[in-house]
Image 1 (cartoon, rainbow, N blue to C red):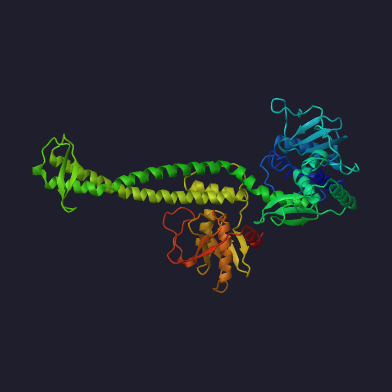
Image 2: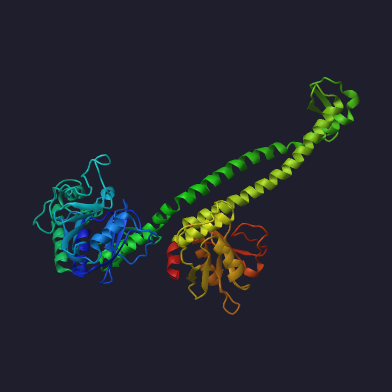
Length: 563
């Protein structure tokens, strides 16, 4: 859900209580839609105008910053570096927040600046204005050629978004919501209420307007009291689904809830969990396009090769035709288009054989023998090509799987290095930019204390299995699905059955089968593994193994992961 006006009211209260008087230390712009303010009181304030997650709150999440700051970031640093926060204001219960600063300009004079956070879905924006309400700059400039909304450009006077004709819950008494359905009446009447909250209010009131008034009075009393809790809803897999400043009961037991004492902590957790995949998807879009195009080409090639192989299935008839013609040369006249001969391979039943009238009977026989030899070689070659094609397809799918689970820039850089080593990406003699810090394998603990290591990509899979793991460690991998290599470290040469079951769940979660209901997972000791000469990264073979069938459980895997 988007942040509604009442939730933003809670954010404003948190900020006002903790950053008034705080000085801006550093400013970063991780992406074109995000700003990070590091404050000298230890707080990190995030502004985000991403269309699916516009928000403002404290954050503990790590953001990867570009090597060179943007011109806009440099402007904000120049204007707000060392500035002191003097106030945090909200426009009624609209989703507009103002953070006032006392800054020092290049002449050493004090000036009042305001950062305006507008939370309006795709029209969200962060705008820096001066004391005269003139726009200095914004994360998203808007002119009439791009939008019919307000003009937002440097030097233009800042205008508030159009005011809503609704009632402020905290300032007006006896707010009447009339009409059916009741939730629609709540949305149309009360300022700062999201559709989720409107449905919840109507659900609790059971469509009764008088009961709704009592519920609204209770909510106002809770806010006056000052002790507020916040609720995050999770689905059966533990994935964040929605959040609110009030408990949500309309879904029954379909979603579980997690309680937070601050709105910032809730938002930080909710969007960090939800946006990691989106952020990585944006950064890996070019690689995914490259891999999917290669995959499509391989599939088309395999389809054509299979059709050619089917044509080779008739090659025995070519040999038989050649032999029958050779055995009956004296019966066949030159110039015939076909002939019927007794087939001694089929109980002397007559077999109709096509001939080339321009060739003699002996030449027709030789032609059939020649075509037979061609199909024999072609069949052998096609089988080899099809096998190689499927092997390459499996490899491509394993890289796509690793890319889908990439968590940071290091993971992406490792996959790029792998694709360069296998020829899918070009190698450049000089590559600019700093190399990301080295990341270790993913680490988990089983419920009975065994350490489990998981490769993040095929390069790490090779390293983990062939170099890091000992011979008595247990290796696991999903059967028939691309995924990571998983290693259970033995304890005095022993590995428990429970550890194998837990690690099998972890293997399934770290594979393309994580959404399946039952997944086969192969496991064997590391000493049974071999890497074929010239095999692509991540490829191993084995001849002794066991298989266990499990149900993937992402919530369990996340709980067992060592952070």
